[in-house]
Length: 396
Image 1 (cartoon, one colour):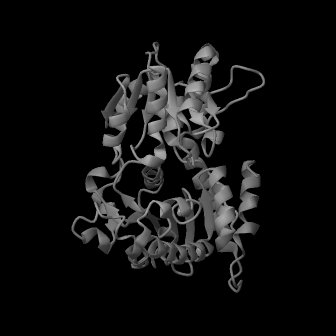
Image 2 (image 1 turned 135 degrees about the horizontal axis):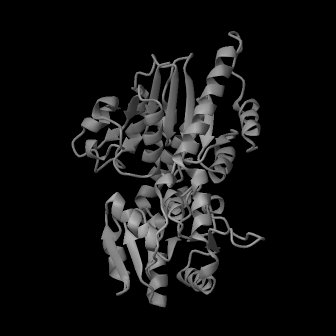
Image 3 (image 1 turned 60 degrees about the horizontal axis):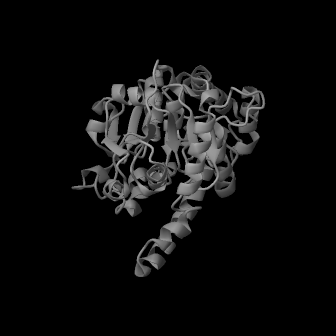
């Protein structure tokens, strides 16, 4: 079976790249297509020879100005020659669904989220633009939403990376997706024999991660906060940081594991579609204090009636005061969180679980396609297929 994997770009190390790393390991003979690629940032196990970039990658400084050339993404994706493949697995962003496979090719789209700047966050994104640019963006976004919706109808099978994203897919694409959580290297976590007196944050230093809330809350409480990550808002965040806040930038995987395993708790303040770093922290047995929305409702176990099985706690509002109250609440009951229980919960999201479920999904999808009547036109809608798979997995 000839397989292609299509990703938006390799310009950083995020959840999307972890998905591709796992898929590339599952299908070592697959070719990989993307818009842009920094060859120094390819995931483990992916060689340069396997990666084919779009024509946009040849534009000088394209990696730095990638957002500015967004209108050309669809054309670049449409230029990929995918006619010889039996199966395409795409790691989704709005233009990636627009690939044009042959009529006999099965296209499975792993959807991290419907593009937020086009859909639910479009008004907030527009409000940040200069007044003269708003009508231009509004028109562009309207056309892009139409293209995104139409492209979603051409995909044979949609997989959401969380139930939260599945709700958004139903809302905006009117499709019924399967849910398979993204891969987390949970098995690599471990329990430390000691804990230090600091809270931890890991992630890109950009506005939507709301690192500012963590800093302000820890400033207020005079708690030590260690921040791992880089991003365009680093300077602004350092400007509001008090003496108990420490920025480490990028760290090695060994150092990151050491930081995870010894923190008092992991702080997570953004509205994420899943939140891999939160699960990574739990794989080291550390509790999570998270904003109670989005993927955190699925990855952090709370309100266990039996007691002793919670893996963290949630706060209800994205404000420094609400987070500070949650930290105080955590400290008043810190001893009831059991590291071994927290780690066991995280293992249910391990990369091995992802691979098992993807493999089963692909097998079922290919079997159903091969048995479909030749004259069936159009193909049966997704809604008649995916629930059956979810029922088999007990995830309906």
